[in-house]
Image (cartoon, rainbow, N blue to C red; front, side, top):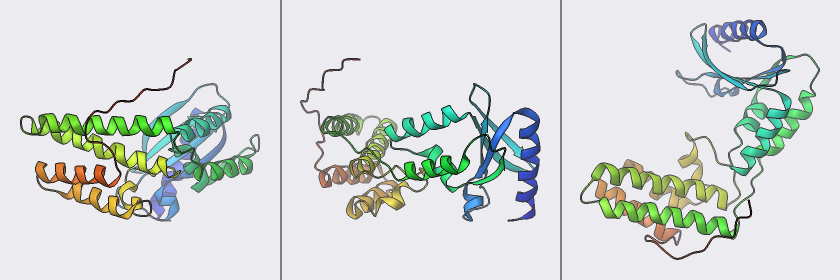
Length: 238
């Protein structure tokens, strides 16, 4: 690791210990994983004994750091909440990070094992959720169709919404945790190669007409309607 990164971590640890009662500190992110670029930052996850959560964005030695302050209950609740959203952010941080401080009051080995398990979990979609997702996608595309010739900016926004929801839907449908946004299109090839190529072409297209056509082909490939359709949700008892 470069000296500036080592100094950054040292300075961050001093600051954290001066401001929090830390039980464990994980340093995570692309720098730790060895895939950093010039804009990479550190994700620092702090387990503390307090009853609050907090997030801090701060530079140390010129390196940006995102610091996440949580207690053990918050952390385990995040695992479950993120599992429902198919986006295991906390689990991924802890599963791929390095423990830089551990006062042994928390079983960090068990916590990391739990995180590693959650990074590969996905609940998938129920039949009701599949229909609801398809309806939302169809409605966004229909709205884009309505304004395509009169409001190009809104049409682009709606087409982006259409395709973004398709990407989220495809990962959930195939019981694959949703990757970070920088990797979603690239990794989509392993889920559905033809659709992944169409989506890449959608974002590379240089005209609203081309984007509209590529988005339409995506929906055709996935057998999703392009217009409003009838459906009824389950009864919600909550």
